[in-house]
Length: 182
Image (cartoon, rainbow, N blue to C red; front, side, top):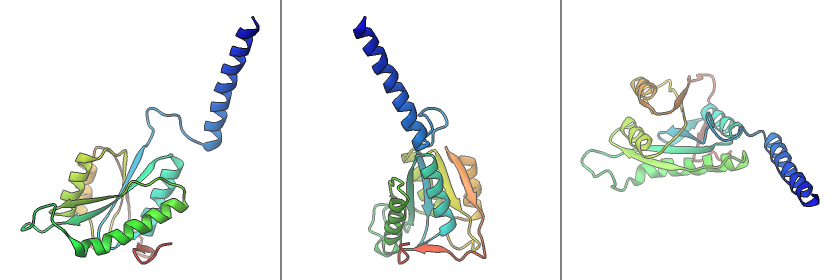
């Protein structure tokens, strides 16, 4: 009888402890609706500070992993796996800066470099290879930089994940570059 009472108290203490830990951390229980990976694609050597901050806030609130992805274009006369040193000089320092910002925010990171003939092609290939629950992109005020309006429409129609598009803030000049680590 005493053994049964001790076992019952141990089980109840374990359940209560698990509930308290989950509540204290503010984590949603695993299951439907849980966001595991948030994709943050970017092109070139800069990313909107607003997009990065929003991604970090959501990843932290949802206990998700941030997956920053540098979208690199490879010219058609080269194979997709060809070396692209000039693009990497732009993208890799920015990936490092994003990883450092995520570390300060205590958000896990799983960075990627996606290659394609166009930015959309690189994003399409990445979405086919990597499961993500949410994609966060920043629209650009300059259609020659980054993803175009047509790319955004394609993303909304075809991405196998929730898509958040942040409108450009022409007053906000807060761009994170590889040289800006904070």
